[in-house]
Image 1 (cartoon, one colour):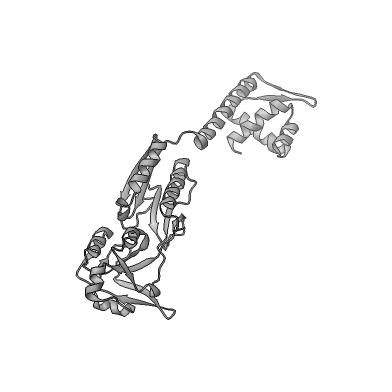
Image 2: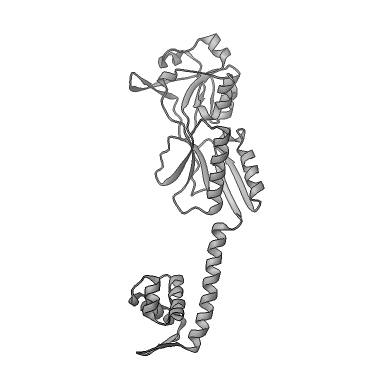
Length: 298
């Protein structure tokens, strides 16, 4: 039996006056109370209660043990309440795609720390998927679709993947009308260890196809691809969330939307273990901040 639960039953014996009454109060069998008392006496190496057919009494050791038990339980309960409801403190390690280094995550972290100054946050930006457990990561911001079923994922924003280029590029090279037209374009490829392929997927007449694209530039970081596309150097395929500002401003124009396939929702990914309160609070805060800035994307 759990030691804390055994101590609660022991204190209950003192408060109710009998093992059976303590059992009723705790909604357990009398035999469970008896086993708890035996375990405590074995660990203490002393008799704590003497019993007769009519009454029970606490030994000298039992009286001292009772006082210590009440103190331990009070400290335990206070610690639990403090962990749940007290000021947040301690570290949070976050990993996110490179584009978040320019997309306001640092500002969101700043606002969070103003409310919770005892928390310390480490940001790690990387386009490749970082293993949470192996790198002691508390929260990973990832675009879907997600594949690791052992992790917990919380949807933050909805998005899709788009093919796009600058207005100047489309004016010069023409807008593709079907996916195969991309073979005649300078496609800027995002090559990373977990997704190295230059085959872009589409849906044509309800059937999935892939078009192998190529161009004069390849990068393992999304930032230079975005900059090249804005400069009119070629076509990129990106999650719309990561370039929503450029799309809204007309700096990048999408193409082949009717053939697009692939969700690119944004998720907060955590381990499947019980999360501490500071991580829960940060993910709640992050979701609220993102939804405030992007009210139509949920």
